[in-house]
Image (cartoon, rainbow, N blue to C red; front, side, top):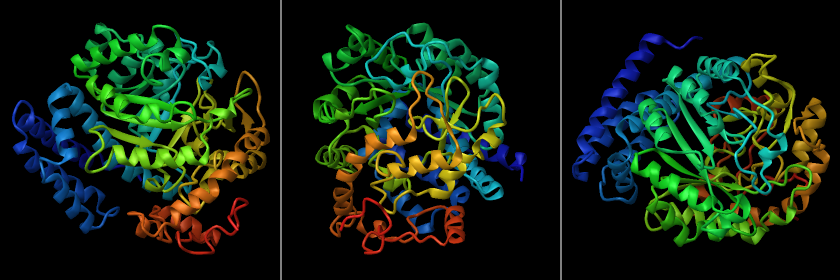
Length: 505
């Protein structure tokens, strides 16, 4: 079932020409050409994704992009004018065409062929080393001694591309400690994109020059808030260094956003208007929000959000990124946006994680594994027992506001680890799945009735979508669930959650 290379090359060339035309028609000119060019790109994409979305959806997209004065078309206009053209093109071509279109289609074919999850995003840690020592950093569990060699990373990407994976995220540790190897990797694999989660403190002009030359890199800068909020966790003076890095990246037209861990202590600060305005002024295009996870020995469970705080985050993030109002910055909340992506995306369903020891983990926050990429092919790792347990169990809850097998459904992670014999990959202090689950159970029980109220609210704009029995899952997922005799209950079905240990009475 190999991808047709001739067709693929022709499609890539067509998208390359279309992206160039869009940039040339818009950059340095007024927004009036935006709509025409955007519609052309939509028309080009539709045949590639015809099986995933009905014609009515495409008509809605065309209508949306036809208004050059809308919030998000203005956002796109600024990006085209402010981001380096080569970076813009390479990220659009590799992330959108290769990753989201052609690659994703091939990934879906392979999912059916191998009857397992197949990711279209792969995270790997080049190193556990870091030039900072942030309080509570989960990566610090691995110490400063572990590294994937360039040969390891090259093989991961080579095998990944053969499986249709063209989006690679580098976590850590601090990946820019391995910048030369990552530059070399990005240069060799020009049909993929490499997005680095970084503290930003090692970025200088020479770094920016190299990124502009390569084109296929982007960045997520870690930040906890304004001023002391960041310094208190990351060290004195780090905030100013991060602001300098952002300004330098903005000046050079690099593509970057933020990676923000929100906690009970900072959740309002990192979603405030003041914080948003500050980020936008420094060139930030997007925020990726991550719920604090109580992983590792000694994790502070008091930093987990209570139900009221979490509900605030749901409403606030959706307010920020609304079609109107809010702020011109795109925000994703990976815990609370589960309903947009059909629940948990880990375990290879959309992504997987490889730590700096080579252990292939279902999630960046789930440190259990049966496989190591140094000993097995990437495909075999994705078919290892714990990954297959994820495949068989997803979605872990019919209520997609409770997506995670750890945070909201801790009985699931406990069961999967025990049944598959997965070993703990925490190299500093072993933590049993039972102990991890115990830390999550109180918050899970508290969140369950609130999530149920929100999920079944008939006045919510998404009520109709939430009441689907298929939950918008892929055909391969629906076929698997049919074999299992499993039914997805709609939001307003009283039988929906009857088997959950957290079901409301």
